[in-house]
Amino acid sequence: MYQNIAITGASSGLGRALAIAYAHPGTILHLAARNPARLAEAATTARALGATVTETILDVTDQTASKTWINSCAPLDLVIANAGISIGPGDANFETPENIRALVATNITGVFNTILPAIDLMRTQPPNATGLKGRIAIVGSIAGLMALPISPTYSATKAMLDTWVTATARSAAREGVGLTLIRPGFIRTPMTGINPYTMPGIMAADDAARIIQSGLAAQKTHITFPWWLALLARLSRAAPPALFDNMKRKPPGYERKKRFLKKARKNFYELGALGRGLPIIASVGGDYRQSPSQRPQGQKFFWLFFFKKSNCFPALSHSPDSP
Image (cartoon, rainbow, N blue to C red):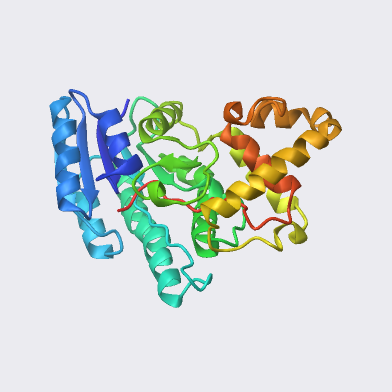
């Protein structure tokens, strides 16, 4: 369906996985990233699968370079604006001005440096078999569905992209350009690999790429997964602020979290009536009667909602890939 594809942040993580997923004979892939060695490896792998590949060293915060790259890739059926960064609050548990500016520069300005030239380019292209002139996919995050004290600017940048795509999709479609927002949960990448906390529902980048590929083939405006984590994120927005009063910005240590989960598990057994009264816990988080080793990570996420006085709330701060 998509034969000419441009992907930013294609050197590792989700960007690389998407490049490999779309690599097959007859496909032209235009891959861009900042890391030359990793980008070359991704391009070599894609070529081995039969795709024609161009590789460009690109910092998406450079508006002129981004526009030049997009125009050099014409014509384009699909642009995936994947490049993004995640920065923790640091030892002081507060984001620095430098953190905030870097996140906004890459996750917002960098994304628009990619997609605005792509929209202008696609407007000039003839319609394809789907009736559209091209599609632009923007990688957001489930973190954009909630206000995270642990990574406020990261959440805000993803929320901004979420709002923009939702508000713009209809008008863009009238001009022949399809817009898609991708809202993944935790994806196993080099960036998330260093997180010291439990990441509920984490999945391999290859699995995430297949879900995204299927959603783009179906021309969806929103691709959100896992659904249950998105549901929790939405519910958290309606929760009283006091629920997050004791939530620390900096991820807690492993031992402290382990002690909390042990206590929460004990309380959860004692509150069996609560568990029976909330079937969603069994269906999403797993059966509370299972042994600890059998319970999925998702259940720990529910415990953190029911036992709000802990400082062990898991962060949703993540980035699918580094540009």
